[in-house]
Image 1 (spheres, rainbow, N blue to C red):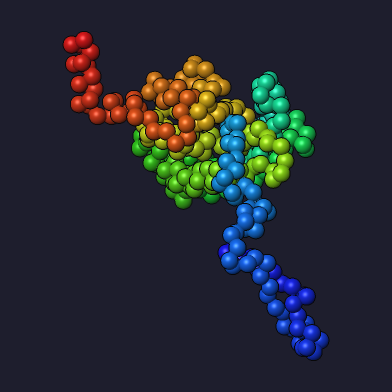
Image 2 (tube, one colour):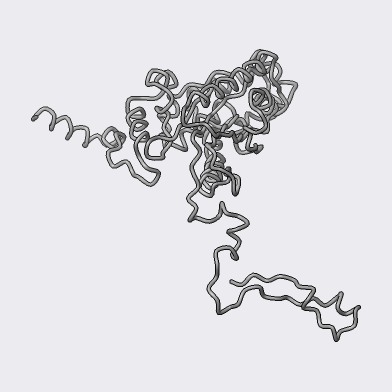
Length: 331
């Protein structure tokens, strides 16, 4: 496709000046018979959109739960302050800053990370925004590639102003009904959160695949993505990313305030929790044997690989378990 530009030199000198101002000719800067050059099709201005450049994938995706909030220490706050406007306590701000120092130390201790930056995604809730502001304090401007406020990673909606006693009843009912599917009146279920996290995940994958975080023309950076969000939302994010089942999700525990969980790029290019965390840490978070085996596979697999030996297959289908037991006994 030819690129068209407006040219003042192409205005006809035979036209009156008044008509020349109104009448603009369009001049083609590319001959239709010539082969199209890469520099004329927009790739030179937007190199991240050129698939031939194969942009590097971020080194890590770091999940951070917000610091201690006013609602964490006094549940009555929810009855008079809208959930999105609840801020951090002083302790929560200190927790967030300490988390920032832990992230900085983790990156700097990695010998390969000599030229690195951070890019942040943050929930629009006040407690998450305040967490990010404190968390970023240890980093110079040169280390911050940018940030994006992302409404899809907000807290699960529990309704508007919350009645304390009614909420206790609702949360007890959720335990009986199931944490994933129970929907709070005028609010959301975890399944609803899953739907919007799916949209966010696709945006995130697109940003990764087109090299959104790599400044054009600059030396390649080791990018670390940091997602500052909420307990349930981060668990749903992991569920969606790793395709965990509802049962596996319901066995997970909340991160503590300002605690982080690190998905690090493995040897083949996929992200694995076992690259940074040990088995005991992940078991405390709620990962089962099958989930840990799968994380070990992610350490070595390539992004396009499919796990044909997924341990979930045998455990889900009873007859395969029976066949495996018979085979072991015969052996």
